[in-house]
Image 1: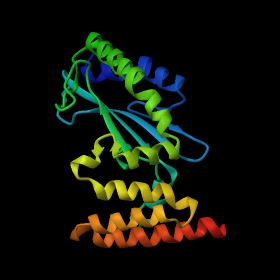
Image 2 (image 1 turned 135 degrees about the vertical axis):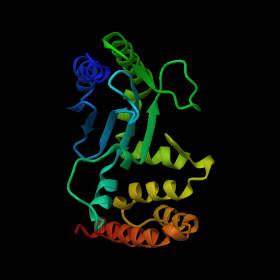
Image 3 (image 1 turned 45 degrees about the vertical axis):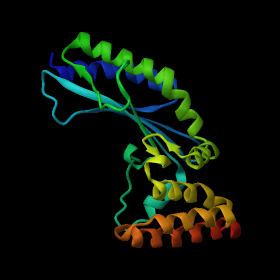
Length: 220
């Protein structure tokens, strides 16, 4: 059995049932949990492009993509109907092997059936300790907005200079309540933090958000 086969079997037999017990659906390597409102939490086991038949490196990606973010993506000219991807999450983060430094990109190593079992067991342990409940919490748009205001969206930290992304996230999560001072402040922050290559995008986004906020009040 190759390392890829061993990982695939362990994901099917161990990871999949654990994800389904938490309300996720899907199959290797991606599982999704969707609320009635349309917000989606995603857990994905990514294998390195440099893996071989005898050695697979893998890591766990996590994301939350609220429905307003999906609506914005669907409005874009290049958008195509498809399942939402974890890279589109407002919140994104990764899990790494137990005992490794968060500042260092360390992946799980799979060589055979035994090492695949060890890797999956550790992934599930990490999910139980650090992720399942966090993802459930962030499936609430109010909680996700609070995280954005606090400056912590997983990978993205406001202290690291990602104001554009935080302003965009706050605008998306505020617009369905209609026009407000908080929404205007988020859009003003978006304009201030938009560097030249992203200014046209920011202008298009702001126009769309204003339309969505107005529609939320009129019911259209």
